[in-house]
Length: 283
Ligand code: PXP
Image (cartoon, rainbow, N blue to C red; front, side, top):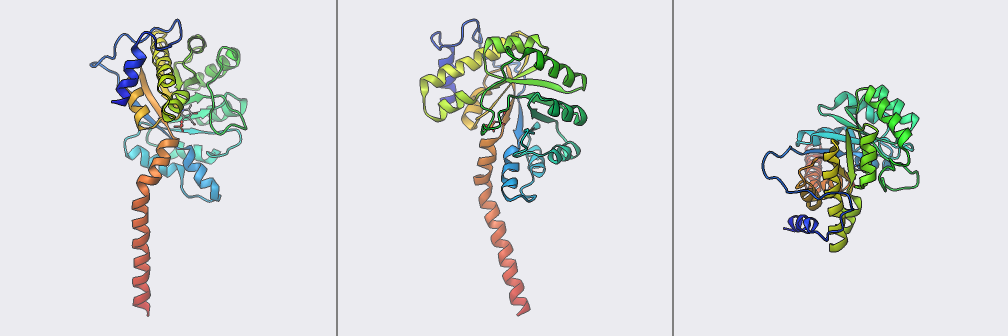
């Protein structure tokens, strides 16, 4: 119901959608393209790195996600290697049965790694050392030349490129102009508004996303979305027929901890009981 409410509000004329971005005419109910789920495993690596060992293994987590139905795996190799590391990317490429989407800054170092590794897809993101996560979208308008070169080089290596951008008509136009086949719309501001219970700003942000998705489709771009999504916001975004891929990490990995904790505790208790039984047998 809440998801539907967002959609209704965003379709109203005073929704605050940016000028020049037409709202979707209708949410088609038939002939919809299917929507894919990409799982971002960065924070499995964050947890592993907190102890410096090998557990939990992000590659194993990726295999579990694929076994559960995920369509692809996303991993962000950051300049500072704070979570995913080079050998994770190599192991993902060796072991995954589904596509790898390499999230990366458009730097010389990362382009060289991508071209050498050849993941199925690359999502270009802005990257700042001091940020906790990817805070905003790329400024494609400002960095048109460098990004056009990066898109060209990655495309020539057979990698499908998407640009992580705000749902802004100028950014969308620039993404199309430099030949990117896909964009990923940054859903972070909307998700923050929903989480904070801010109804009106949330409706404005959602209207912006819906309008941008429609505009991008009209320009021939494939539309993905991601950042900050949880069950409710993913459900809502999945109702936009233009969006064909969601990339979700932090919430899902966090929820997996609580959903999976009971089973892990049961396994640990069973292991301890076996140990006690052995002690009895030895005594
Ligand atoms: N898409 C992109 C481009 C991102 O930078 C991130 C965060 O790494 C995500 C999706 C996933 O966001 P979250 O971890 O908040 O689900």
